[in-house]
Structures are given as structure tokens and as C-alpha cells.
Image (cartoon, rainbow, N blue to C red; front, side, top):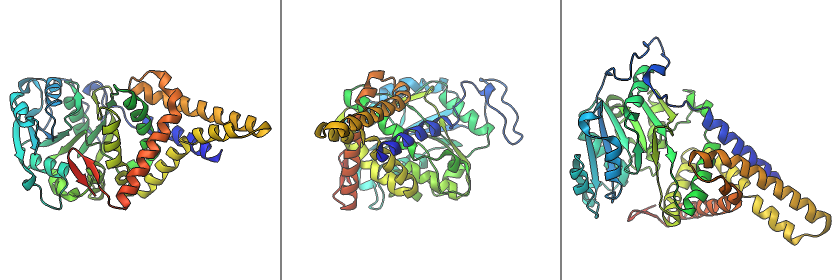
Length: 384
């Protein structure tokens, strides 16, 4: 019963943490001035700085056309001066598709990745090295931005005198397993994110979302770029920590109205993706990791409670059923806002016990394989 209470408390905290983050405004006129900065006059007014888009891409031929269609023609894309796709030893024609879409391509082979670098940090760094814009925008190939989002993010960053802005995106879910696991995982992630500590400069709490990071090139270079996090599986969170330690001003915003992402295409890729990141995310900030672990394990208490009820008799059985059903109803209700954000039918909330059990199984497998250095696979590479 205590576990169920802990799980419900974690889910409530997750919702509170997420909603306390600033929502990226729909227009620059609505941005509040900060530190005496002048209010922005109009959505079409030019801003100080040009943007170079960097897209690290390994076997992303299927995703790139939709991403470029979302970005729109370069000549009509406002502050964007160039788009660079880093073809990270792809085998599916990623580079050719990128060129056909009008991007500049940096081709990497496996030999171009130093032994102490992981794939994504290396690709991001190589792309950044080839850029000339005053701002760098790191986008994952599976993101789908709206045409105005780059302009809005740049407007927010300049108006608040920030060195980096990152957006949390709408999580698109199309298959059964995506709908079961992605909203639940997103909820549990925010059970551990303390937004008050995020804003305090004297804490180690930091967060950027690698799917959309806009950063001043000068700030990026001053901390060593992705070279500072070359060996990190969760390079975005690690980079946030490096920037914060260096005194750079950064903010992560809710951007679900302005961009979306579909990270996985079924249970196999969910298992690989969550498995690769789960333990690394918990380990990089133990305090946050403990919160997420307690919340997710508490959320999984519904199934054991109902299982115990099935084997009990008399008053004990009635009591366990009552507690189990109450915990089930509470967890389902607390999951509903996350389902809505991902446009998942609300009836999936009734499957919360299954979501929690499968998610925890993946997290435990990730922990065991990481601790024992058995290796975790992602896109043809093994991470230890």
C-alpha cells in the first residue's frame, strides 16, 4: 500500500513539475521583457543572429523528407542560414536524401569516430564545426517543427538574454506499444525533474532535450561543445550540466504546440531506446534517479496488489481488492493528462498496470546490462 501511495505522489509531482515549466509563446509580441530588455515589436521583425541547423543522422532516410518539409524552403525560413546533415556512417542513403532536400552534408565513416567518443556527440560536434551561424540549432531527424518555431525560440532566447533554449515536444504515438509506454515514461521522467532546482544556479540540476537545442555558438565553444560530453549516452542532459557549471544561462520550455517527435516505432525500438538511456539518465543525477525509480516502482504496485487479492480470502481479499482498485483508479487518472498531450485515446489509462510493469522491466534490464557491462544496442552500435 505504501508503494502505491509513493507511486501516486510521484505521478502528482510529475504533473506539477511539467506544468511549472514555461510554455513557449505563440508570438514574439507576447514575450515578457527580462532584465530591461525591450519588448519585441512584431513577429516579422529581424533578430540579432543567424541560425545554423545541425541534424545528426544515422540511417534516417525515412525521416528526413518530412523534417525538411516541416522546416520549409531555406530561402523562406527566417533566421536559418544553413542546414547541415551529419551522415553518421549510414547505410540507407541518408546523405543522398539530405542533399536532395537541399542540405549540406558532412559524411562520417566509422573510422571518423575517435575511440573515446560516442556516435551522437561526435556527429553533433562535427556538424557544429562546419557551421557559420551565430546560433546552433540541434534537431533530431524524427522531429517535426512548425514553420515558426525556430523564429519563436530565437526570439525567446534573445529577449531573455539566454545562451541556450531547449524545447520539450509533443510525443507522437502510433502503435499499441508506443501508446502504452511513451506517455507513461514521459510522466515518470518528470517525477524526478525538480523545476525549482533547475532554476537555481547553485544546484547541479540541469536539463536540455536533445531533440531541439538552440544554443549560442560562442557559449557552445566556450564549454568545449559536445567534446565535453563525448562519452555520455545522455549527451543532452550532460551538456546542460556543463553549461550550468560554466555559468551559461539556459532554459527548457514546453514546446508541444510548436513541434512534435515520434521517437520509436514499436516495442523493439522502445526497448532498445529506453534500455540505452534509462540507467544512464538515472546515474547522471542520482537524486533525480532515485525519485524516478521510486515513482515508477510505486506506479507498478497496482498489479501486485491485485495479484495478492486474487490469492487471498475473506476480509483480507476484500481489503486488497479495494486498495488495488483505488490505486488503479488513481494512477489511471494521473496518467490521463500525459495521454492527452500525446493524443492517445483516454481508454489507454485503464492499461496503466501493464504500462508500469513493462516499463519497469525495461528499466531493470537496462540497469543490469549497464552494471554488468553486457552492452546495449542502438542503430547497429553497442554501448557499454
